[in-house]
Amino acid sequence: MRSTKAINAVERLKTRSGNPQYAAVSLSGGLFYLVDRALIGEQKLSSPLPLDDFVVFVNTLKPEKPRRVSKLDLAMDEQIKRSGKSRVPESE
Image 1 (tube, rainbow, N blue to C red):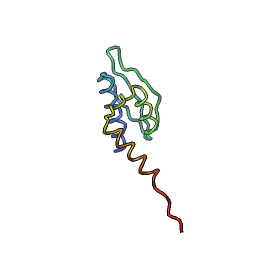
Image 2: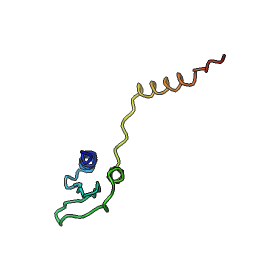
Image 3: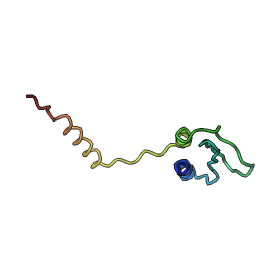
Image 4: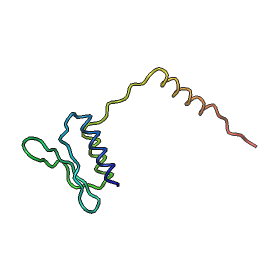
């Protein structure tokens, strides 16, 4: 079941890059590596990595676009910052 995390990371990479030829290969011992199944054959893009390191590697290949921030998001963030600073600890 832990391989789902690796597969989801590769699916996000496929979407961001527009290349449907990426695939995760699972090895015994919980190791994964990334391949590109291009027309010239399967190219190994990483060495075998533990799950968390594999997900970090895949995410760094094609980072996500920063999400758009609306004026309401900025106002809410500002309000949260102000509410946290305005609290005065109670003293006895």
